[in-house]
Image 1 (tube, rainbow, N blue to C red):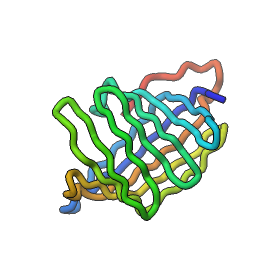
Image 2 (cartoon, rainbow, N blue to C red):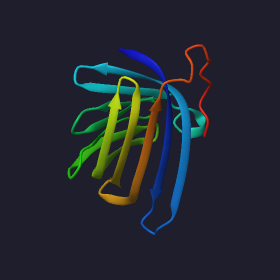
Image 3 (cartoon, one colour):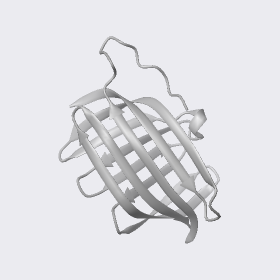
Image 4 (cartoon, rainbow, N blue to C red):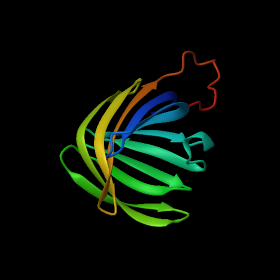
Length: 152
């Protein structure tokens, strides 16, 4: 099973001093089922700052892994109560990123669903703040309606 979907992402990043930055993104993507996991993929755009990168979420019952391949390369695992370390590769170099997930909820089936994750990120063991994102996955309104490009 693989189908075209519309992905709506709402995210908030709160720095250590309490300043918050909120983003919203709506983009076409694909939803596929592979074994016991769902794969949710989309192409990043210049508006997200990650142009040339494909983002894929591997959604498992107990954890979610985010893979980015292209201009940015990384693999981040979100699992409640556990800290996972990964390399974050950019044109400027590689840094170690730690992800400590406070809460995770995913309700995905063949028709779509939602993902909600709250986590803390540290870069080279220095906390950058708290993050929260919510993803809504829906089938396009009609099979004959064209899927437009990404918007922020």
